[in-house]
Length: 446
Ligand SMILES: Nc1nc2c(ncn2[C@@H]2O[C@H](COP(=O)(O)OP(=O)(O)OP(=O)(O)O)[C@@H](O)[C@H]2O)c(=O)[nH]1
Ligand SMILES: [Mg+2]
Image 1 (cartoon, helix red, strand yellow):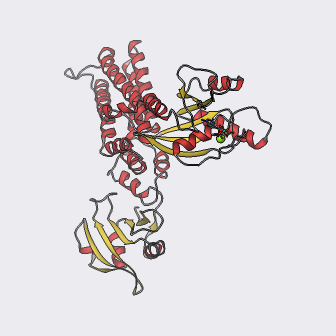
Image 2: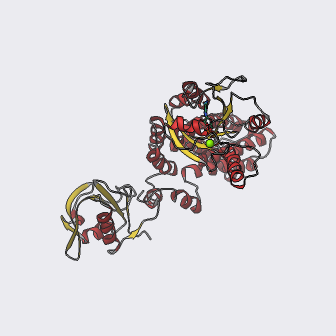
Image 3: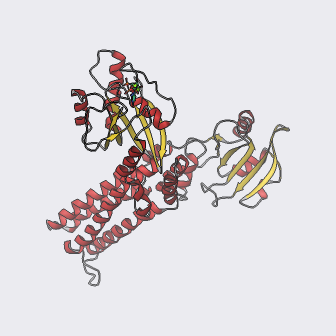
């Protein structure tokens, strides 16, 4: 049973107005009970009404109520959005009055979950709501808005329709072998269709390396030996004194983070403890964290001190990061450089030299400038990518089975697995626990 929920939808803090969202079968009736003004149960959908929120004949606040009548609302239920004054105390008082009059507090993402369950949104659209909210640049916003307008849904639907057509034909062949006019699905019939889908999926997966960076930014880990200038680089790029810089090796222990934009790519920078052999317990813990951060980073800035000969530890870091997406940064070029490395970017974090070259290298390595030409032919996050990879692998197995002339009814199992994996992307075949896990990532009131 759907109950009546409410939550503050605007950020916690003081502002001109706060919005409290209410949703549920009785939402309009329950708000009307504490609203002095027009009778909200008699108004048209999508209208706004001035009045007072009352508690036992006492005015709590004067407000504007937006009324949306089911099914024409964000989540498909009856909804009222109460615009009250934006003070923390007054907003909480209005919320409390609602809670005392038949509403319960919504869980995180519960409005969007309702919208999904009421078929107002598919899962890719629901995910893109959060992406739109957390966009930090033009490309991220454009990418997530296109998905909010169903571009990802349509992309997946094209594959699902194709597969559904195959599955239907196979079923007809099995159930009605006497039908002469039905197409007989043979291995030769299937091969080109599967091949075409595999090519298209490969392209989408390749594009998605770029789109996920465009939409979510790139997790960039600054690593190197102690004292090479990692924290100086972080501070220079963020243009603030965020991390402590000192000539004492082993200054940074905990990770220091910050984000900044270069053109249309957002870098989530993490400054780490310098990696080297250490007997200091606290520093060793920091070093362990650095090593873990390398593993989970999308991009590594490997900082080396160009004023000193490369030693065993530098060479070991070059080796460890070899197979990662990385930029080798030769720092301290204001001092006399002792070595040259092909591919390295030469900078002085202290004097802010060489930063333009570093920025160009980042744009180059992320391929971000090609994002707009991808025309929506991409996925938005790793959840979607993992499921498409699953679908791809199932189709690949189906292809191998076709080539080995395996029976169609066995090949059908792999094709069906691909269909289900694609369905999980849009939520048409999603499990309950997945849906709950996904929506808890949302903020309250969304
Ligand atoms: N000459 C010169 N000195 C620099 C440059 N960048 C950093 N330094 C100096 O190098 C020393 C170490 O800098 P940090 O940024 O603290 O180095 P770090 O790599 O973060 O060191 P740990 O936190 O100990 O791992 C400081 O004295 C900085 O002023 C540079 O470009 N040129
Ligand atoms: Mg440091």
